[in-house]
Image (cartoon, rainbow, N blue to C red; front, side):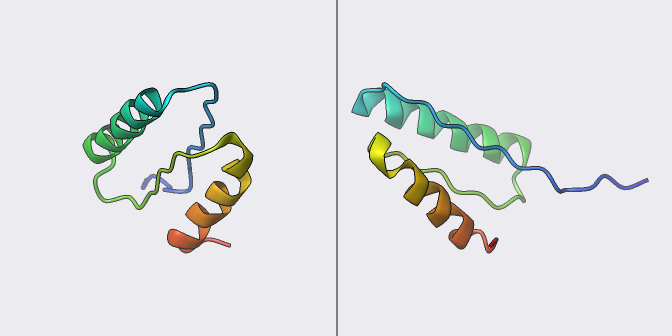
Length: 65
């Protein structure tokens, strides 16, 4: 029985400094490469007020509506 690849992960972590955000972003991408190297993904960091735009932008980049 083949496993369906129909899952996604979304995380919003607020209250971070620029350095903390960069470190967490790097860790997420390293983990993605280690655990699911053939999967598509995007990660972004920015101002809390832009969270919605970042999530929508990620959907467009990976080809989802």
